[in-house]
Image 1 (spheres, rainbow, N blue to C red):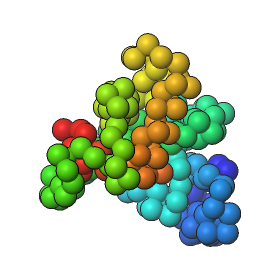
Image 2 (cartoon, rainbow, N blue to C red):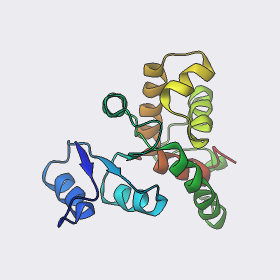
Image 3 (tube, one colour):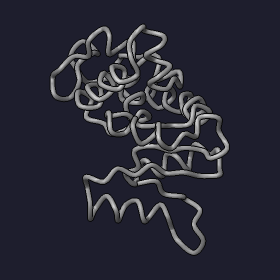
Image 4 (cartoon, helix red, strand yellow):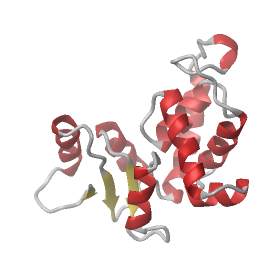
Length: 171
């Protein structure tokens, strides 16, 4: 579902929560006219899978839907770039409580290829850009991202990057 966060007379962030509560299998991609990382964080907190700024060069809603279908979480690159310092600061303040600083909650380690994908995602690359950089298809990059989500037990790119910093996969 594509949801415009600025519909008149509607608290759209609350709508995301209601949708996820009543229909947990529905994925919500929030769209906005605002290039605002905090609005994106609030949308993710409510259960959104993606956040796209309408004026960004990436706004291909079809590509965003396909990315979600392949386990990805579309996020406008400018928002990702501004979120990274916040994620790094938060990760630096937390103590890492796991074996060797590298294991995920369910005990599965990320493969070296998954770590490469995660490094590029943390830099704000789309699945297509990750694929191009690593010499793999965008679908394969999305499949790696889906595995990362499962292993780290997260639902979005932002959560994956944050948790990866906390668990020592990213520096």
